[in-house]
Length: 237
Image 1: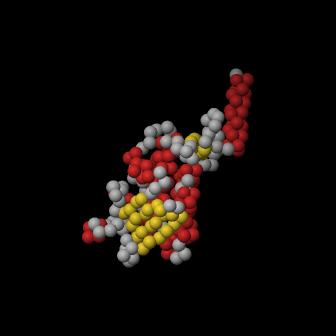
Image 2: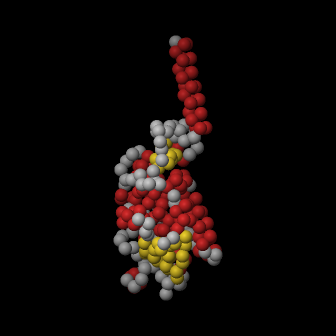
Image 3: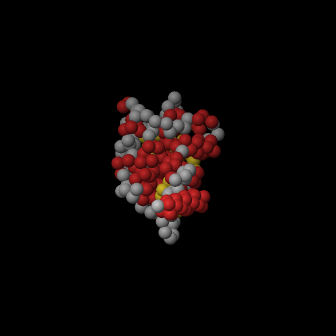
């Protein structure tokens, strides 16, 4: 017997929009918090929101590696990104479709699946969970109404959000419409952003050097201080 849920698409897309990638680069807990808020808004029973956990999935390390490669103009690392959003997922999402299940149609990362082990006597009869996009909603089907309900719900929700999150890396690399984002490192030594990274959407004009006016002012002041020190040293000599 299965349990079925329905949830809106816009809330998911807002949380994993490409302009939020750097939010999660610097603060991975923020993604889990936002997913919990989404679940709370769609399911009145608090047990569903309380079941959400991204721990042990290893997604954040992969996100950081991919964004660092992106900033350094390295090619798209398919070995990493395919664990979360395969080329098949990418193609379907570009067309407005989504379908995922566990056990997967293809092969999901063994490291991810190991967190949610299956038994051979159930895997052939029905998936533990399935998520399908139907119009403007996602249909989430959990295959077992037993003690596995909440772990399977958590797995389904996490895969839904993470597939869409890493889709943003695919789309950003390929500069798809609405994903024309570029990521840079701010040159201000006192920049407070994680690893000095910032993004620009639909850039027109020259490549930016600083992420904000305060960083630009500080950078210019630092350049003036260095120039003044050089002049003073030259004058003494």
